[in-house]
Structure formats: C-alpha cells, structure tokens
Image 1 (cartoon, rainbow over the protein chains, first blue to last red):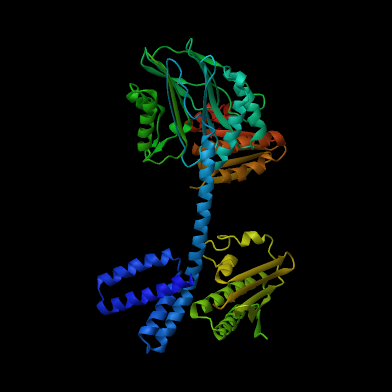
Image 2 (tube, rainbow over the protein chains, first blue to last red):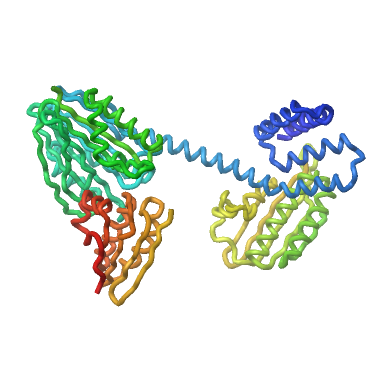
Length: 337
Length: 137
Length: 110
C-alpha cells in the first residue's frame, strides 16, 4: 500500500508537470487514465488531494501561504468522502459474499427440480421454468413409474426468492415420501397439505396442481390446491378450455380435501399447466389477459412442445420488456397424433 | 513518559478543543497532513458520539511508544470515555451502513478504518470506553 | 408505492379502508395494521378493499395470516368491496371458502 502510494505520487507529479507545460487534451486524457488507476489502487479522495498538495509544493516552492493552507482545508473537506468511499468498498465486498452464497443456494435449488423430463411413449412434453431473480418460488415435478404412468406437479410458493426457495425443499422431500399416492392426486394433496400446514409461517401458503397421466389408456386425473388454472387444448375442436380444479391453497386448513377431476386425452390434445407468473405478466398496458396466452400458444402449437413453451415464454418476456416480475413456469404435455 | 491531554466534552466547543489537541499532538509526533486529518476526524467522531448520546465524557489524547527488536514505534492514542447509556448491541453499531445511512457521520466503523488499532468496551447503564491508535510509519 | 390505510373504530367493529396495491412492498404495512386488531377477543375486523386494484400472493398471505390470527383469538375477519380481479384471486386460491367475503360495493355497516 505504501509502495503503491509513492509510485502513484511519482506518476502524478509527472503527468501534472507534462500537463502544466503543454496544457493540451492529451494531458487531460492522462489525468482521466490516472483517475482509473487511483480507483484500482484503492486510493481514497483525501489521499488524492494529498498527492496534489505534495506535487505542487515541490513544483512551486514559493506558493503564497494562503494557497497552501487552502489545500489543507480541502483535504479536511474530503475526509467524509474518504470514509464513505471506504465504507462503500466494504459493503461491495459484503454484497459479493452474499451473491456468492445465493449462487450456491440457487444451484442447490436446481437439484430439487427434475434433471430431465423422462421419455414417455406417445407423449410430447415441454417444460420451462425461469426465476425472476436467482432463486425461484416455482416448483415442478415429473416422475414416471414402472408402468410408464406419469405424476406431474406444478406449484407456486407464496413470495419469491430465498424464503420461497427454503419452503420448496420441504415440498420436494414431502413429495418424495409419498410414492404410493402418485396416481391419486387428491390423496397426495391432502397429505402434502398436512405437512405444509404444520410447517409454514401463518402468512405462507403454497398453490399446487397435481396430475397423473396414464399413457396406456390416456386418462389424465388431476386435483388442485388454489393453483392458477391451466388450459386444455381440444385438437378435434381446435379450442381451449380452462383446466381448473377447485380447492383451497395448501397450508390453511389441516383437514382440507381436494376433488379429483378427469380428462380423456385424445390424439393431438394437450394440457397446459402454468404458474401465476405467466398470467400475472404485466405490461405497460396492464395485465395480460388469459386469452392472449392461448392466442400465443395457438400461434406456436404446430411446434414440438419444448419449442412451443420456449416461444411463448420469449413472446411474454418481450411484452414485459425482458424484465420478469415473477417466477415463470410453463408446462405442456401433448398426446402425439 | 508520554504527553497526555484530556478534554471534557459536553458542548460542541469541546469537540473542537479535542480536535485541536489531537492535531497538535499528531503534528508534533510527525504525522503527515493526511494522517493528521485522519486522527482529527476520528477524534471528532468519537467526541460527537459523546456529545450526542452520552452528553458528557472525556477524550484523552496521548503519545505512545512500542519497542521491537527492530526499534521503537511511535503513535498517538485516543481514549473516549463516557458514563452514558452504553451500547446494547456493539456488533450492530460496528456494522457498515448502520449509523452512516444518509451520510450522517462516519460512525464507529469509520473511526476504526481511520485508525490502526481499535478497541471498544461498553456496559449498558454504565458507559462506553473506546480506544484507537494510529502508528507513525 | 405506498398503501393508504385508514382505520375507523366503532363499538365492536374496526373498519380498515385500504387504498393502493397490496404487494411484497406494501404487505408489511398492511400486516402491521390488521394483525393487532385480529388479536383482540370478540373484535370484528372489516377490511374495505374497494380502492384496492391489485393484490399479489404476498398480499394474499397477509389475509391468510389475519384469518389464522382471528381464529386463534376469537375475533372475526371480513373482506368487503373486492373488485373483479381481486375477487378472482380469492376464488382461484379457494380462500373465498374460508374467509368471509362480500363482493362489490359495501352497503354501509350497522
């Protein structure tokens, strides 16, 4: 530190002398370069003033007394900036530390989500989940059992970021501990609700839509706990229906029960599950209507499911000026024609 | 062995006197102008804390020397003592951004940064003692 | 953005008139206003949402917390004046089944 200071002192004197001699733009350009170096070497404002004092005392040994004193005065004035500068540096280090921690947590969170979507005969599946910041409050789940039946879930944990992510780990482990209910959406939500109700703060809750798909007969059973309704696309009629399942959010009542709904899925039909980050998408003109989302889906429905969800996301992202306010998850499961 | 001066702080004038005493001694010891300003600012902040939160206290300024195998080291030591309310959570006031938000002052972390050594002891209901040392390089 | 909360007290009822958007930023403010009221035994707490254009999930959480608190403390929570968008949120989440809600304009209180 002392070394770099004397080095800077030397350099400062040199460029100052050059500037005073030539008084041109080049000299000022050196000054600008020097100011970058000052920051790089973490030299604080009052030290810069001191550099200046030392240089001109050397260059002008017969300076009027008042001029010299005025620099001492300036030095005193700069002390506050110096302190603020140092504090800023230490806060920046702290921020970096926090960011690193969050990055580690975010990559841990990734392990809660399925690493890949299992291949299922006759089904075309697309999944996209994008957090608004580093950590997500959206959860999805996708498992295939030995009979080829698929259990899938989409959940939205109230709030976002770190608190939501912490809560997600509970959901993930609870889901893993009920393998026998994978094919009974209502029963699964009832069990899950009991876990959530006992373990979350009073103002926390979780919404979830859970479904099971039997690809041998193409039946889809599903139940919902206060989750944003999805859509069902009917290929024969080329129409979208709301896919809603009535039920209260998880974590409110210990003894909630959840109705089970059923759909017979025909070739070309598809199921759309989403989080409220999709429908609560806000633009300058207000909220996006659900119809705008089905229009977007319709526009890309000829594409494979994964490309479909990616294109819909891109368009919604664009509508919001590429700034996500809420976590976003979109899942499409299509029975192939 | 050491030059020592003690300044009572219960008005803003006391803050100025403490600054003056600190600057004189720092100059005498041989500190450069930047370090003089640092020592003075640290005294200023400590004295201001006494004035604002404890109403009454004193600032003691003294020269200190430390002997090493390689020779002696000289420095200035500031002690701020008060019988004020004390600090409940010292860790909190030592945290950046706690007292300084809005640019109200340097706070204790600022004082710690300005000086080389820093030590604080506080008992709620009894008072606070802060010592800070700057060594001559 | 700020939430404007006015509280009116009568003998057994406290009415909170809320104005603005209830989101992650304003939710703590709402919580501070509602929760102490729901902790009073026998208190009827009416929240007038006529001038609330939007509630996000964190905001909903405050009402959930207030509901739980009212059940634990034997007070009563009632929401009135919900616009269509806000009402949809309560009905999708099934909270309309557990919270006492009156849609639209409130017809004055007793």
